[in-house]
Length: 241
Image 1 (cartoon, rainbow, N blue to C red):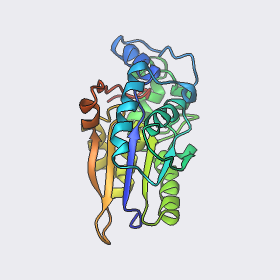
Image 2 (image 1 turned 120 degrees about the vertical axis):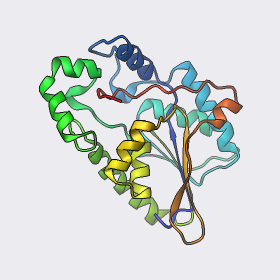
Image 3 (image 1 turned 135 degrees about the horizontal axis):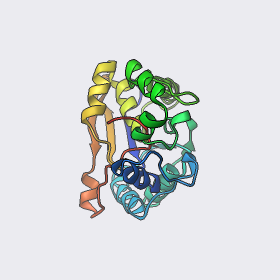
């Protein structure tokens, strides 16, 4: 990733799915009440306010290219944020930025998995968060593989450019893993200790001929500055924190 001068990623704003998942997990329910498929979950009102705050931040540092997950909550975040720019920038949707697919665990809380699918819960515990792949779903390693392809394309096609991504919680963690060359253990420690707030910003920058280096991780200063409420709801992920 030596060619890009700057890379950033914004996690989508708070979604109605985040709220439903938070309520289900805190209430020790087995299933999350979300009527839409994951790709169609929209932003909440708070999420829209957060996305607007990202737009104010973005107006001060417009990118050359924007790449967006095709999931509705991410597309809405990007559309609201980019409306603040004086001049349009190219925007591409790329399914490699989509959220991790949970397969058989979809819409189950962690309590729901241990109650309804104890064999899967045991397999998940044995394999670990990075390599566990639920039937019909993806492991973190699977998501990392598709992100490697995306980063390779950006490296080849956008020499010297400033690229901004709009994605999801797991994607932010895995970009750090790929760009900074973290080990599995380092990534798991980061995921355990770190929180990716809705509409937080993570950025990397290259100085001279050196590699991209982390500048901000899950930064929410722009939300506070614009009076938007920071929220830290987890994704619908059916696994322990």
